[in-house]
Amino acid sequence: MLPYKSNIWKMYVFKFLRSLHFIGGVLVPFFLDWGQISFTQIMLLQSFFVLSIFFLEIPTGAVADYLGRKASLILAAFVGIIAPIVYTLQPNIYIFLLGEFLWALGFALCSGADEALVYDSLKKTKSEKKSKKIFARFNSSELVALMIGSPVGSIIASTFGLRYAMMFMAVPSVFAFFVALSLHEPKVVRKVNSRNYFGTLLGGVKYFKEHRVLKILAFDRVSITALAFMVIWMYQPLLKQLAVPLVFFGFVHAAMTGIQVPFLNNFGRLERLFGSKKRYLLWSAVIAGVSFVLLGVNSYVPITILLILLISGFGLSRDVLFQSYMNKYIESHNRATVLSTVSMIDRFFRAVLYPLMGLLVEWSLNYTLVAVGVAIVLFALMSGVKEEHLVD
Image 1 (cartoon, rainbow, N blue to C red):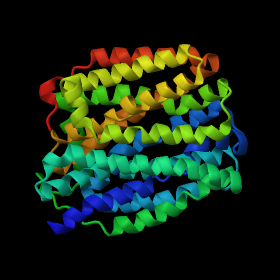
Image 2: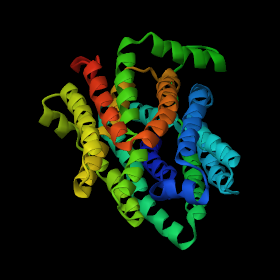
Image 3: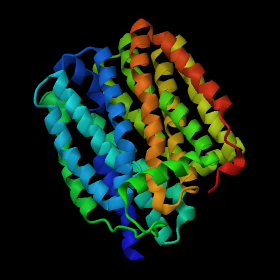
Image 4: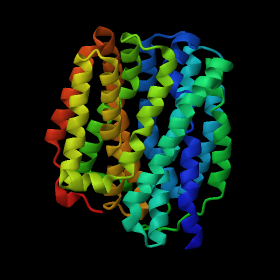
């Protein structure tokens, strides 16, 4: 049991190192100033990124179920070393496309496999009931890394140049690689005798397709999370429109990340405050949606920052709750593949959403913010999630 217990804190460290992104606070300037591309091209790059993950999610999820979660995470860390180096070879859109594909490969190798290894480690130590708390801490380690990485990246960019904020991201991935090597693979009981790759792949997809509750939870998770995530791409153009100096962008980014930490570590209290698990899911989406609408009509900087933080706290943290709820319905031998199926659906939705948002923002940033807010509220009201679906 002890080796599997050590997996939990090692995965916290792994998540932290993999998420230590120095480029977040200066991402748009990196593309516009060093990369010499337009905002529309930035959105197309992001669409290519998520589309790449869309095609990679199921195969890499099956790799994790077939070869093991540990092997998948080791490969993810290795790709994380190569990607930022390739990305910064020279400012060229085709090199950026290759860099985005490598980022997508690393992300897909990690997606599903990290959650699966954490949850199966909890099962080995008979601690499944702690999953909501553990997943909250797991994702908090990512948020803390992002919160630290953004200001550090601003310092790197201002001292050495925008290119190095991206390039230096290879360093924490080196340490993540060695952490992954030290993990202990939880042994899972398979319901199939043959370790056939395509059988693993198709079995996971079929499992999701035939599971009604999983599909209901996935609809809520994917639709609202993807729309709420657009605040990450819209806040910088909005701050620029309101004449906020660029030097403050990184601090706003850090605050957006930091505000999620208390949400992630107080889900139980928030659910009691709102009356039930179902009510919290509904109102967290509605609050995020209304905040988007208000962003579109407000021009006072302090209120703008407050609304951005409300979206980040209520809107972006919801995804972690679904990690806990959905894992309760997935058998271990299919876990990584089923989670990757859900992630694949999410990536496809975002691949379509990004170019549309790019065009709409160039037409009118304010109207786009209002439209996103209205869409979030509508999806929240359409959700079929019931209280009995939300098992701790």
